[in-house]
Length: 118
Figure (cartoon, rainbow, N blue to C red):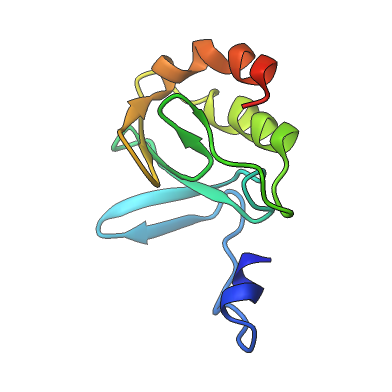
């Protein structure tokens, strides 16, 4: 939905596929499909660097926004729990906005986020 809003007369050059590895600046980034903030949201994980780029899926202190018509809170929670919190705890989380964090720093707060419907 976001692509169609910003590029109504153009299809994307290619789609990122879950599990696909793309090379950028010498890094091998594995695509993790993490819907919730948007249906096509992805994070990019490089185990060699010990980093995951989470965009608007996970921030320091909780999940990204889900107040849009295309967003869904339970889905972003599933994405964070099943795709991100399974990464090693020392994995650095570089977000789309704000301060970096680690998987280990965020993992203990999952139930709090669920309870308050972040």
